[in-house]
Image 1 (tube, rainbow, N blue to C red):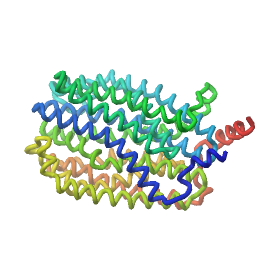
Image 2 (image 1 turned 30 degrees about the vertical axis):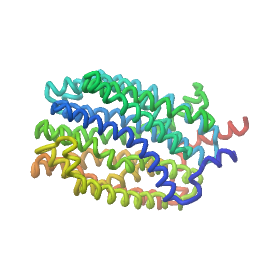
Image 3 (image 1 turned 120 degrees about the horizontal axis):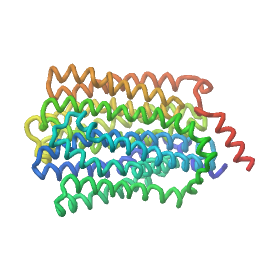
Image 4 (image 1 turned 90 degrees about the vertical axis):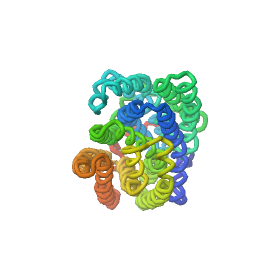
Length: 465
């Protein structure tokens, strides 16, 4: 028990420091992968074929869809392991790590198979033309089957962050990014494989991430308990209780992005190519905020598991302060470099207009996306995962479709991005109101654990053993 409590590193010390360290280290790993995606886009733009850039834009919407499944499983694994550590039960944390990884691989393989079979229909649904469709499908047929490996890497990273080991979680994604960066020019240009080369490099990088994420769990955190059938049965409900709504929450984002891609396709391949550039640029520019959700989750989870409600509230507000600082800093840099960024991708006409729009006022609006990230992480770790589900689905359905229709009819292709940003503002503020209500409830009124009865029984069992 003492050893397990020692691993609950977020129960004391500066919360802003914990948020900063966890976010920056996690974002370095994320940005290593996102930066390679951005470099992919640069290389593909250098080929001088607009249909290739458009194909990456359509493929990116579907890859976002599959990756979101992994994010949902990672959220569940991280939250459950962090709570177990906060409660002082290391055995429970090890068992949950093993079961969530097992379920992740199984569910990921099934999900990848369903998507792979339906790739042509999905790409057509996004509005791709015949030539672009063939390119996008060929690219995706190589990457989608590696989803189980990506899932192992993402869940493994979440387990490491739940232990407070953000540095080693970061190294897994950095290793994948390095592998991808080395292989990209060799396969795209050296072997003249173009999009196929980029896909092969990404597939190998995913396998690398999985391997590097698992090693430190065994070396430095006591490994995993090999899941037995009774363990899998006991943990299925709490895993589904968090993973189900978390996956539903995450799937809302690519569905909303798919609608945006479809809306942008009405303005031609140049507009889709510009949107693809913005789509690759966004996670690199705001990688810290994309990492913030995974970074805040374990901090909230450990303090909530230990019953430290005041520190839970302070974590949320200090995370918003951190978000504001990041958005202001990044927006200033993007605005100063908007010309060179557009030139780097050879963006002209409509594509250049979209890049300039993103590197100005729309970047400021990303604060409200950050607010949604922090709120959803809080909901997931406070026992209210379905609240984050409703917020995210509202933001990416009504909060995307209605403003995109209105602003695109008024402003054209630029209106698509503006409408998407407006929806983020509305639902970011809504998430703030809802999370305040949850946090201001008495501690006894907030479920400390969705399936507390099973967990108390397991704790008694392990203590007796």
